[in-house]
Image (tube, rainbow, N blue to C red; front, top):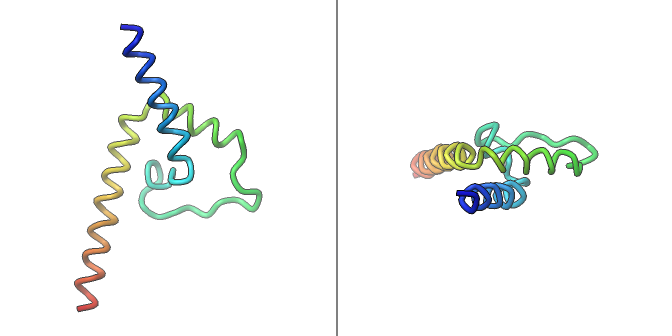
Length: 82
């Protein structure tokens, strides 16, 4: 049982670290939020990784929903051009 929990947490941490620059898709919807002048800090990166460590299945589902919304918008934009 401990192996499964460890794999869950390790995958969540890797997921969080790899999706930090795309976090707007997973938490705030498909529109990118403006970043502060200082850029991202180490603290914000660590916080995002910690949240994703425990909640990566939910984040993955919200990311898939945002991808679906973006694909539909792109399809509608292409249809409007023609």
